[in-house]
Structure formats: structure tokens, C-alpha cells
Length: 349
View (cartoon, rainbow, N blue to C red):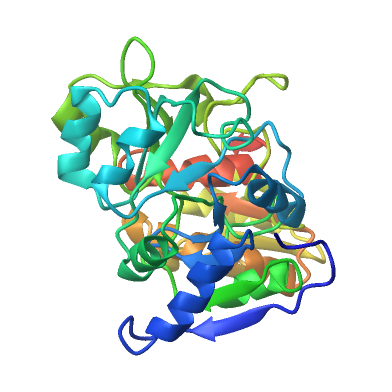
């Protein structure tokens, strides 16, 4: 059992699973012994602990400064690991697993008695996913335990998509950071609940609403996905809190055509104020401004978003006006992250 003495964080670069086997074994041993490991997935980097060890899971909350009413996602490497974690895995869950596992999809299901309360924030459900990044699955497989892992950042900050982001937030707070390069998706997994009367989208991600409905039929979108949740609501998925993913700067979303946005920035520009725009806007909007991808490429926006939010901190931004992305397909995930970073502050021009 690891103590709370100062931690000497080891950063281990893994460019190839075979050549990096010894380093992965070291990280897997840390997980088995109650330690914390930050590791890449296809979505974002996660801070992992043995999901069956309540004391190890408690260290995740301490390292992140995360409220304990925010449930964690349990990561597995093989489908056979699902059944012990849940009371039942209904056919809709099996159907989704056949199509989208391994991949950026989390399913919320009725939890079994072996899942510690701290993992599920006292709820009667557990969130489970099987990541598609080979390094993530190899780490889980070698550890021999399911791994509880929220994003590897300080609570409320933009999620990490590189090992450098993890180092900035968690150096001295975790035993190991596995550097597997940048995450290819860039936003957290889609979360769908299959524990109620019908399927309910709790968090949008790279597996889109339309893709879910191709498998399940009608999927209800939880109002908290796109709208301000109740302040005292008990959330059933990570990322449903009122404010999340935020840099130090105040973020304000601005909806409207680019010429009106440019005029708005002319009127509201001041020291420390930045515009967050699309690639096509950079020569139309007065500086300083940063881009988070092409206007019609929501997947590229997802890959860039969190790194750009962290870049704004590096630049000392105090206020950021961001052009509002589309709310369809992967754009729903991008909007969901931005509107939470903005604490649901949005101006319509």
C-alpha cells in the first residue's frame, strides 16, 4: 500500500508496446500495489488506479482535487471483464460492445457488489469502457485488474491530451506517467446509460448520437448535455458538472457569423482578451486570436480543443470569446466541453 509521502514521479516513454514491455510491466505493478499511473487512451490521458482497491481509488480524488460525488469510469481490456462488474449486461449493451468496443464509448450499467462505492460515487450503477489504444489495453491486461481512471488533470482544468499536460498537473502526485504520444480523439468518451427505462446519452463524444441510434433506435439526450444542470444535481456520469474543462481565463461563447464576431471583438478587445476561432477566421478577426480547427471539421476541433485551452493559460489570457461550434455529430461533444468551460455563458449576436 502506497503512503502519502512525497512522490518521485517517473515519466516513461512508450513508442512501441513490445520494446516497452518492461516499462509497461513496471506501471502495471504500481497499479497492483495501490499506486497511481497516468496513461494515454485514444480519447484523453487518464489517471488510473486499481478499481477494486478503495484506498487506491481514494488517491485519485486526492491527486486531482476531485469531488467524491463525481463517479469514475472503470476501464477493461477484455469483454470477459465486464460481467463481474455489473448485475446485468442487457442485449443493447452487448450490441453496442460488438460495434464500438474497443473504442471511445462508456456504458453505464447496474453495478455488482464487487465495485466499491467510491468508484460509483454511491450510485447503483457503474460506468465501464474498453479503450481502443493498444497501450492502454496492454497496461490493463498486464495489471490484471480493472482500472478506474478519470482524466489525468487537476479537477476542473482542461483534460490532458499529451504526457506534457499530465506532467504539468500531476508531477509529484502520481507514481508513473506513461508517455504514449498525443491522443488521437482528443475529447473524453461518449457516455450512455443503459440502466434506466431507455438509453440515455449522458456525455457526447466521438461515438455520435446518430451512431448510437443506428444500433439502439431512439436515444434520449439528457438535458444536462447541452444545458445548465441543477447545481445540486447528483450526476450519473463524469463531466456533467456545472463547470468543467476550464482554463484560468473566463470563457464566453459567442454565436453568430464571422463578420459580426469580428465587429464584436473590435468592440470588446482589451489587454488579456483573446478570440478563439476557426482556421478560416484567423485573417478576419482582430488579433490576438487562436484557432481550434476548421469550422466544418468537428473531429479536428476535438483533437485541438484542450491543448488550445491550455495554450491560453500559457499566454496569460484573462478573457476568451470563443466562436460557438456546431452541435451535431462530434461537434456536440466539442460544444459540450466548451459550454462547460464557459460555465454556460453564451452570447448570441
